[in-house]
Image (cartoon, rainbow, N blue to C red; front, side, top):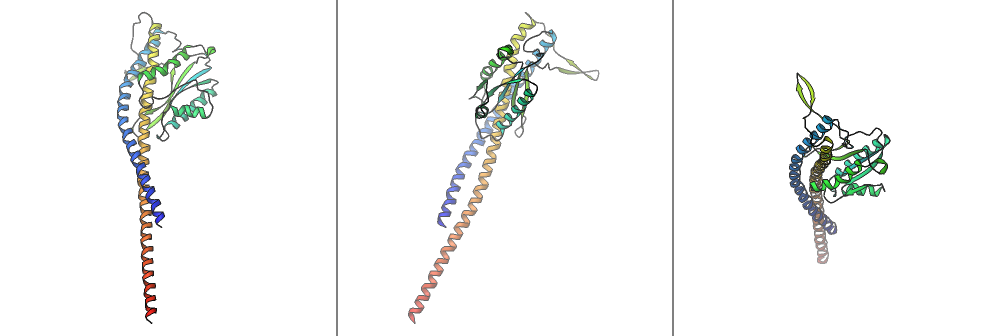
Length: 306
């Protein structure tokens, strides 16, 4: 019985140490979420307005540009998947990978070849374990991405879009990442970045919605403006997606670590009850042995007196 009590005590000590670690990780993730949310809030207006500006140039000038013109028969697409470098975030990376798998299956069903670009060790490991080809991958910055990281990722993707498909280029660029909606909700999304979907603003006019866009004068030409703006557009969109994914990852980590901490607390309570029961059983057994010994001694003494 004493050995069983020691086992319970060792397990309680081990689970208590684990609980301290998960609680610390929960607090760290909570502090990082605040910073990530601020970065997302700061980058989103820039990305949105840059998209409107590029859209206005593309539609207002009727200029055909390789980054805005739809291919007549697209044959190849690039898919950028953003996952995490680390685990302990519940189903965060698994959900993003699942969304990318669905997108890839849909593109292949449309008769397109798919080139995979991966951000994060979890995605790289997933594709590597299944021996799938990855055109290019990046790791080491998913927890706290910078604009320089976004430029590093965007460079090969823009080059692939500008390159002819016969030479290994692509007709479309898609991105899969986890959008941060709230502390409790993070949703994997699939967006097509290129060719640019000509988004428009709307305004109320005579009770009906009318599409409007800002008007620009181009100097020296609309083509030169697009050459300058579109790489910035891709970089800003990828940067915003990296920030959204980072905030989502920290929220998922916080939620997973809180659940682990709560479960550790419940396990400690359960083990404590078992340890108390074992200690009570040990005390009861010792009392029984003492009483039995005293009774036997009394009987022996009574027999000798006779």
